[in-house]
Amino acid sequence: MPNALDLIMTPFLVMLGTFLVVMLGIGPVMHVVELKLVTIVEMLVHLPFGIGGFLIGATYPLLVITGLHHTYTMIETSLLANTGFNPVITLCAMYGFANVGTCLAFFVKSRKQSVKSTSIGAMLSQLFGISEPVLFGIQLRYNLRPLVIMLFTSGLGAALLSVLGIQSNSYGLAVLPSYLMYIYKGNQLMWYFIISICSVACCFFLTCLFGIPQEVLEADGEPHDPAFRENQLTGKNAGEMPGEITGEAVYDMVSPADGHILPLDQVKDEVFAGRVLGDGFAVELTGGRILSPADGTIEAAFDTGHAVGIRTENGMEILIHIGINTVELGGKGFHLHVSQGQKVRRGDCLVDVDLEEVRKSGKDLTTMVIFTTGESVDVKSGEAVTAGAGFEIRIGQKGTRGSELS
Image (cartoon, rainbow, N blue to C red):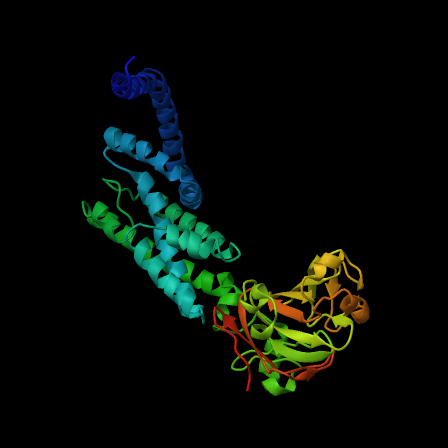
């Protein structure tokens, strides 16, 4: 077949074949499936005491998460064609109102500006039927408790509507526009309005009481750190702690080694000086014992002993890289004392370094302490530090650039 003809005929034949398979094969099968689904849904809708309404209302949001909620369209269409009414969308609609309650709760309770902004944006979308920002931006993001509360509230509202026999005469409208589907009869609109407002209020109060995670209750810049909470309650100031963040938060942090502080800008390695792995500081070693600067868990312990990664109890990730290009030594001059997954306390020994052995190999022993989770770090250049003792350091919010303290 000539190329010009092939370009026309091949897509045509493929589409024709697909059309015939769908219409003559898949279509009839799906029609039978549709009728069965309609029967099942009708059975659920008419279960006594609102049980079916609760099941539909509580499970519908889970279908939205997976995208399977579109299968309800054919069921609703069939119900409208056969009965003139659509009770399914009524039962599913309380999900949108419950989402509004979730957004309001996070907006009111959160002390983080980013969460407040997310909540308002998600609520405005939800008011006109778009629920994904609430689902993925709030409910699935924060420990699933907001999602469970929303599912319960959605199911409860749907159960009440089922008991009252509320049903729409249309489909496709959600939240604010959904009231238009009940103006055909006064008591239908009245009860739908009352239950929808109650669903918003119920989800709001339950989320405020049980669904707001601790991280949302903390203002921007506050760490999820027991030391900080204790400092707030006792009224201590930042200067009373071994390591400090100016402004709002305090970390209990010590120097990992004996030596002198050096800003990353002065490190003779482009990767560290350019903060490719994150902000931090360096220590020009005068002693060979490397200690943990904070309480946490060993996330990475290289067999060569040249680097150790720690995840602190407040969620920061710290990489301690001993020397420049020391991985090339294959562990010569390093004695590793920890292993991956091990819990460490502030001041525990991580690595012993034979300084003379490493220097004989011609390697720079400048040791970098990198905060790989994005915090900004300010240090005082040239400050003499002692392993296990406090020193002058400021750790700022993620996304800001560290500088040298004066």
